[in-house]
Amino acid sequence: MEYIRAQTKPKDGKLLAIGHSMGGILLYAMLSRCGSEGREPRLKAVVTMASALDYRCSKPLKVLLPLADPAQALNVPAVPFGTLLAAAYPLASRPPYVLGWLNDLISAEDMMHPELLEKLVLNNFCTIPTKLIMQLTSAFGDKGLCNRSGKLSYRDHLYKSNVPVLAIAGDQDLICPPEAVEETAKLFPENLVTYKLFGEPHGPHYAHYDLVGGRL
Image 1 (cartoon, one colour):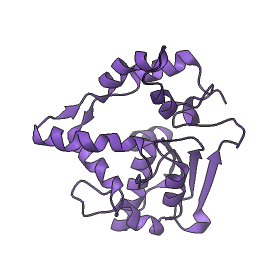
Image 2: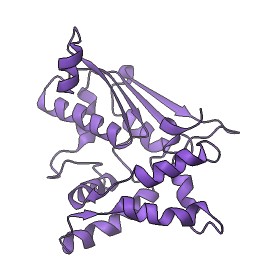
Image 3: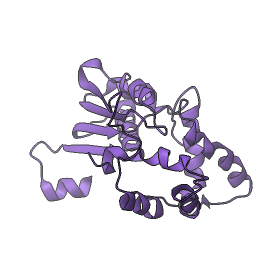
């Protein structure tokens, strides 16, 4: 952000920040930390897509929980999530579609071009540090996502924010369900936040990655 400010030299010194999934989580964490420390975030406005601070209603993400303790106990520095997903993809994309449910986590039916979906699965996901997985598990607790020490709950200081926020959700997002996005949005001052749900009862529908890679 400091590099972009130096290159663009905005008159008010503020940037517009847009984040999808983890990117939106990082922006929420930044706003919360600035609120807790009484600092100015120097952001004109924030847009988050498929992001939340409390994932108790997300069943798919709970697959991370069983990975955390064994990885920590075995002192494994990281979990090769991207490699595992790439290896599983043929079982999700070809008959008899043993792991067909994986596609639903990424994209709603007919919303992403098949070649783009394949590239996304094979190239987008990476190795996840064990320390990050351990921290993410806090998003399934009563306090919501916390910092690594567990002392700062990012939910607790969003009400202090003075930055306008647009929180976008997808109607068929199983990873970050609409209710999770909406609950996080409610933590901001009401006059500064807008919640927008993409998707209609009879289609089109939006899963987790359709908000950035869908046909529409």
